[in-house]
Length: 284
Image (cartoon, rainbow, N blue to C red; front, side):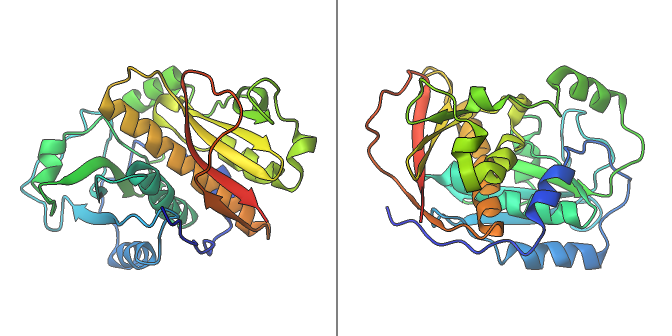
C-alpha cells in the first residue's frame, strides 16, 4: 500500500500529551458554539499516514439528539457532547482511527477541554440512532468532550484506582534494540528519545499499552502485542491503541524537526508469538 505524508499538528505536542488525562466527569453543559466550531474546523484538517477515510461526527444531547438515549453504562457523568468515529473495514483502518482522532483529542486538550476514548463501555445501538452510518461501516469508538468537572464521580475514582491510569510500563518492557532480545537504551534512541517517551505516555484501553518497538539501525519497527486467540472486537481496540501510540511518536518526531517515512517491510529477526508486526518508520 502507498503510505501518505501527514502534516505536523499546529500545537505544542509534548505539552498536550503530558497534560491530557482521561476525563469521565463533566460539567452538565454543552460546548459553546465557538468551541464546537473550533473542534470541527480543526478536525477537517486531520489525516493519517494510511490514507484511510476516518469520519468523525459530533452529536449533542441538547442539540439534535435530545430524544436519543446515549448510554455509557454509568462510566461517564455529565457529558452532553460526543464525537463518534466510523470507518470502512480496510487494512490499517483501526490504526488510522487511533492516529487521526488522537490529533483532535490533543487539540481539545490544549483548549482546556476534557475527553476520553471509549471503545467498549458504551451502547452502540443507542449511538447508532443519533448518527449517519452505512451498513458496511465499522463503529469502533466514541469520545465524550466537554468541560471537566472539578469533582470526580465515585465511579471515576474507582476506575482510576483499578486501572492505574497514570502508570506506564518502563522502557525495557516496550522498546528493544535490533531484535526482541535486548532492551533499547535512551542513549541508543538518540534524537528520538522524546518521541519514544511521548509514545510511552500514550493512553490505551485498560492502560494495557499493547505495543512494542524494535529499533534496527535507522528503522523503528512497531508491533501490537496480544494473544492470537483474542476476539476480533478486542483485537480492533488493540490496533486503535497502536495507532494512538504511532501518532504520539510521529508527531513528536516532526515537532523536533526529525524526518522519516512509514513503510511496511519484511522483518528479518525472530518475532515472539504474541507480537504482530504493523509498520516501520524509517528515519531519514
